[in-house]
Image (cartoon, rainbow, N blue to C red):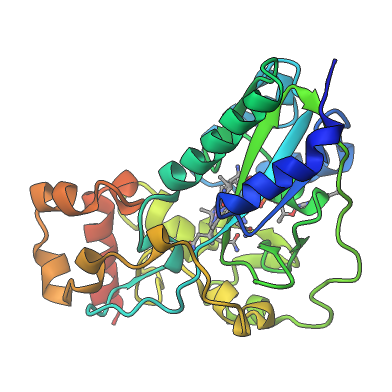
Length: 309
Ligand code: B12
């Protein structure tokens, strides 16, 4: 058994030095049946829509050993991306998390640096870095590590900086002294997010039916739209349920530089988007999350917005 409790402080300090806003430790060895049931029920209701990978890899999600041999702990971090509402030339809206560099690479790189640091403390440490890249219950682990609470919009909300944060984690084969969930924070009586969602995607506090969510419709939905869809002007992602959240009202604009709006995105006029060809798309956007979704879906979304205006 590898025990690194005595290095807990040093590890946290290193994570902050790397730029993470906050960091906490979660135990991976205690299954949470209630959480598993919540997830299974969510899938049974078909709330995942066409995201078949969520069902296919459901077993791995609650068996950390299937991702990292002898997984004992998750070191969970938050990477802020808030730079305020993106100032875009075009009428087409893009959510805040998508206007800068692709976070999968940016956050994973810093997590790899953290893992390299852990290995200097004990060469026997093995681990893997994730950020939206594997079947990991990221919001649950972040809440368990005391980094925030789950809001009615389903988001992990940090009471100090709100919810415009990515969650990342290292699964490692060593034990640590674990953090406790935050106490005393909640949404209270507030239901602004439930009311603001144009498609009523938040079907119950903390429960999102993806198929109704604009983020899902614009990014994950694969085929043409069968019926007129209200995308509220978004061609990629959606921030409505976060924009109205009081915890984000005075959220500091402390996003990482990498997540600043790319000039290529800010400067694109509506006509530029509509005329965008595949080679220019690749050249300008291959380092963003827009590229993963592809130009075909973006064009479909533009068409839908124009049609329903
Ligand atoms: C699939 C997915 C989506 C889907 C479904 C979203 C959803 N709400 O379930 C779609 C495409 C709609 C989506 C949209 C967005 N996503 Co997304 N998405 C994911 C992904 C890959 C899996 C989420 C999932 O499994 N959902 C199923 C539900 C059941 O689980 P969950 O949301 O993870 O967590 C719930 C449970 O854990 C439960 N819970 C927590 N603790 C406990 C404890 C107990 C005992 C119980 C019973 C339940 C419980 O509460 C949570 C909310 O319902 C994660 C990455 C990951 N591996 O986790 C990113 C992730 C959740 N997404 C993220 C982001 C940024 C977004 C968007 C903001 C992007 C955008 N601007 O368009 C929106 C937000 C929409 C919203 N309000 O949720 C971030 C969220 C960061 C944060 N602060 O919370 C994540 C964590 C990626 C990352 N690494 O940063 N996403």
